[in-house]
Length: 317
Image (cartoon, rainbow, N blue to C red; front, side, top):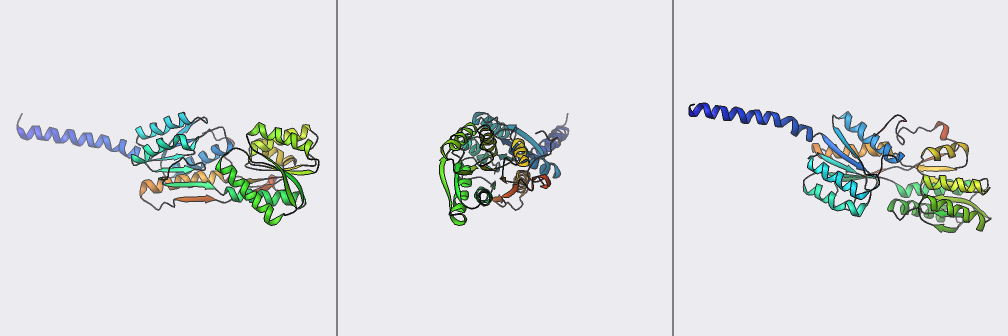
């Protein structure tokens, strides 16, 4: 075989290799990896629905990871996305500090990382999409303050030692101080769902003049309502919360829950996807998107439009 023929075969082989590689590269450049604490949560399910619908509209493929509330599993998912050379990663952190190093690895590889609601520990994130948690607390303050007539005693269940909960508590307290100075927080506790039920039971016995309870999240409100109902105190104690799972929504409909401040999780997911796609395509990245706080009351729940807040009933991540 002559030299020219050998060169021609080599050139054709290289061209074929390039042609085969282009679709794989193009596919990687249109793939987003997303990992959240747990799919079973109505909030994260709604967020994923928003991410997925916005991504599909632009022709992106989504790889979804359920961390099952385990940091080590989420770290594995992040590193898998790095190995797959995804175009971007969207993350709601299962443990902000623990997953931080894996996120840094992704960023070091040139992968933009967008945080959704719960950011990992990193000062190099491309963008953060979150809720106005202070505003959610403020709306609870306005609602609960009015529901008990602007004066009296209440209990405050602060929830876990997480930033979102602290911000909601701060918003609630500042609203009471500014707008309802005659309302007094007579007891304050923190913890998880079961702790909220214990606190509600204790408060109903220890504070006969208590007429309201703030809870940081819906599961805590549901547990509190169950225990107050068992104690025969649900008629005199109003309960407010943030977020609205199925049980909390039912409680709102039957009047045992007074109101809930909400974060538009579906819209937040769509915003996170838009930030990721803008980063991939060289478009304008906002860097921070804060979703407005919303409020639904027992009077309005039957006609409330939940399309920006809750995923459709038939959606499965």
